Length: 163
Image (cartoon, rainbow, N blue to C red; front, side, top):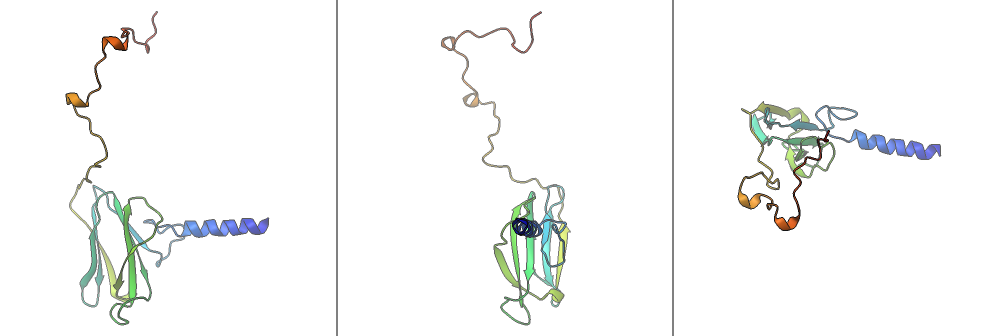
């Protein structure tokens, strides 16, 4: 029974430790990934620069209410000198702590890259949700009026007791 508890505890701990958040997760470390959350009042642009050439190889204006999460993986690049590593990233709804980083590109080695974070002029309001029904005062959107065949309409309020 002790062995089962230990296995469950290790599995739970490894799940918690793999979370992404701006503070670094349960066990923060320099190689665990980066999360930048953009808000309406603080819209962010994240740029990753190759310091050898001072040219950006990745730049993204993060929409308000979204977050950019990325990580650098050693190896797997297409050129062993200029781009030996890979950068994996995803844009999620702000507050997402776990998920698959499903986009990737090759990138310079760790000693040759710099992350620049710029705050754009705000406020920038997110696009309204198209599925949300907005209130209108058009007659077609109002409920039908009560009709005589619907029954008698009470003139008393049921929320205020009579004395």
